[in-house]
Image (cartoon, rainbow, N blue to C red):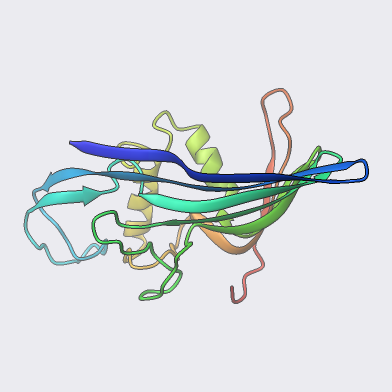
Length: 206
């Protein structure tokens, strides 16, 4: 049995009029819970190739297709076709409530996937902060399984990082990060179905 819930849990909007200017703001709470039952013949404490075999596992399983996640996103219409945007998004275990992986092992990250602020308009979108890398969107868009957990490009990505020694206890993977902190990302409008994504991640302390 698999239970999955997604959608908008709350939505608030208001309008403000100043002279001839018209602006609209919105904040949305969203998320998905993806869980079910699993049987696994072997298990290990980490993704390391030399991790000890802990035996078989049967029980409740979070993240059947995707990780369970929740977030907040909002926009402020500043006129002229331009909007200021923000997004906060993180994953969690639907069985235990444990938060997703932080950049450092043992760290806490409520919004470990996206914490961005940006602006959008006719030129496209520019976001700053922790966010998914453009490479990941390209991988998902060109994958027939849309980068779901089983039998997709995500499985190959996971295997490469396991082989490179990633223990699976933090989000600092050695090959092809899913998301970067302190990143600057520009996404162009679509031209005849094609678009351009550019990222610069200078590093430093978040």
